[in-house]
Image (cartoon, rainbow over the protein chains, first blue to last red):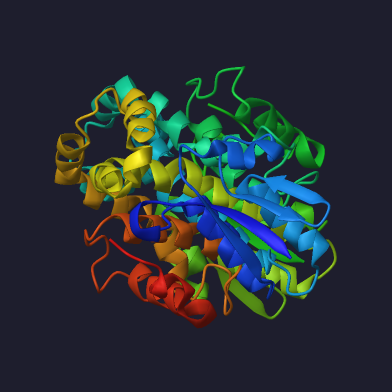
Length: 226
Length: 226
């Protein structure tokens, strides 16, 4: 029998989002568990797991702390009903994240440099279409103002990728796949458009970007840049 | 031979992040292509695809527009070297997105209500630990101020999930899996802590949340709420 240590509030309320992940994962696998509520002042209950936080599970010989580690343990110990598929939909999510979060954080700090590099014949189109989007056609001024906070804001937006890339070379693990390509596209957009430095060398995203530029015989690195 | 229509700037620069995704995906599959550069004023080149934007590919009988549709086409037409795996790493990304984006957007608008529901014995711990994090122990005041913009900001943060959920019932496709559980955990955290309305009924995330509350014999819906 699995024991799950779950954070408890007044009147047996269970708020912890990380414990909820563990409960959903257990249910997904069709596994029951013994519930062990723990308040903030009862951390001695999970000292055996060398953990300060819940969820913790005790599963036969296995003591597992941290919701992501628990998910991985359950999926490998109970391989029926995989917890992590299908990959296509998850890749779609990452691409949607790039579209709706990374690109909007980049566009204002690129727009002036982009405009300068549009082919002259296409500049009126860019001026009209992007001017409507931004409410101004002073792209250089808009960009300058956006850069005051924009580079830091852009770096903040990368945090989900940063967390994954602290642990592994690519978003998709040991080898790159579509989520890596979606995010690399954003960086190549910037690289082709502007000489602006976006990533500090000590950012875990930086060596990943270098790897992406090197991929496929340096396809990205060889692209004509700003 | 595949033809790829790729946005072109001055001096043959190729900025489009979506075209870069398509190029990486083609390289991933080991496929060559014929390059067809297109400027903003040459959209007649892709009129045959009923598209206003690139990338567009022409692959034998298949005309495919939109970078995500192209990725899916390539993965089904050329099943060697899957573009979308392994699912575990992508699920990790989604969980990291919830941790680093959704939770921080929720915490300030929940903190006062959370504090009220902590067991009295645990309240000094919460006061000290969360007070240090926020720089104040006036959680009710902090929460009230955060709610002025915070609910809209929280909804904005959900955009990557919203885009996926417009097209399918769960983040993981037709059936829920770990990314759904990670995001559902955030909503259950809020549900247990506060009566505040977070989602409008016409938000595509709303029916997904209802489905998540119903899952596993209503495990989430039956949880003791605020």
